[in-house]
Length: 417
Ligand code: ADP
Image 1 (cartoon, helix red, strand yellow):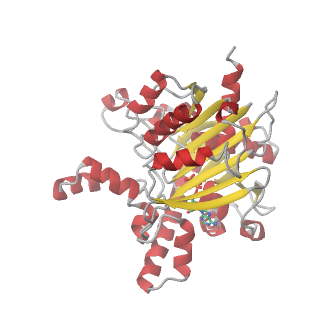
Image 2 (tube, protein in one colour):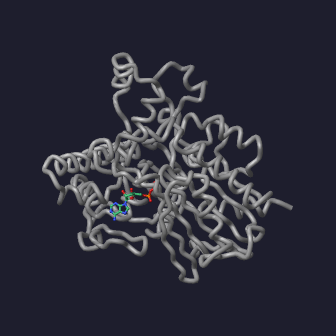
Image 3 (tube, helix red, strand yellow):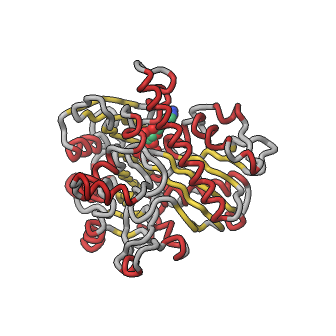
């Protein structure tokens, strides 16, 4: 079975193809084809540049840049590389059996993976106002697939699904009771990867998942933490939308809601303008004025043209780490202890600086990193980077959302007669 996965991020479109035989393997196999577009999101003048990187299991790897195309045109161009040109992996679109989509927000109705139907698309559209950077992009991905591949089965896997087990005390906001009835509650996001990391951590530690208290740190462009007990999410930092919680690449994370009402009163900011500021012009980018990319922030803390730029980069890094420490502390308190701290996604997997700065403050728990293991970058394999005598294990686990989505597609396809 050929499973194509589309993972539409805020600043990137990732896509990959898995070939699965009669049985689903336990460990993620290598994908047959991987394609990615990154739309630059910083203060440089990028002229709408799209950077493509495509690689195949045959060892063909290509990178190129285009500019001036719409998001839709860029994605169509990426997918056409699956069946044409040097990076071709299948002889035609009809060889793809099912397409899985990561859908960020399932709203109050959709938690379990579902076949994409008109009703499911309406539900995703209905809650897209809660996740402005994502749900529309995912619906667009479904339309592009229908145009290029015809009537292939499509599956939606919801990033909110894993957090449905949160207790009401964690999921309810302390506003009027009617809010909850209107669907205003904590949903939590990145659930596909938080769940994968929990399962993988149990495997790496050789322990039963049901015996573990875990804190997973998903640090990509979007960032969130999850507190996981007995394999179930009991709290998470993202909330009603993917804007709450940690400081992120371009998103502010939590701010005093009084700031927003003040800005609306004083400067007549509209809801849409505030949405744009908080989602696209805040976080690392907003504070540093340089970039949303942690690599560029770290570089600027060491070497920038002006001392004021260096100082702002340092402030952005310090704030990012400060909020991360506070959030992890809160998750450990909710769990009443922690067996393992897990770093995942772009920053979590690749930044020894962030991991060391965060872990330093948990030495009082007896948590200690192995500096040599932490410094290895990139880490080829998932690994334990804590010191032998550490009371808390610290793991780096590569995000595998696409593989989790592939598994869900495979399971749903087994039910089709
Ligand atoms: P997305 O949320 O779009 O899936 P990723 O998980 O790919 O994002 O993470 C993207 C981020 O990872 C980049 O913006 C960058 O800040 C960070 N990143 C990637 N490589 C490194 C690195 N070597 N050091 C620090 N940060 C990195």
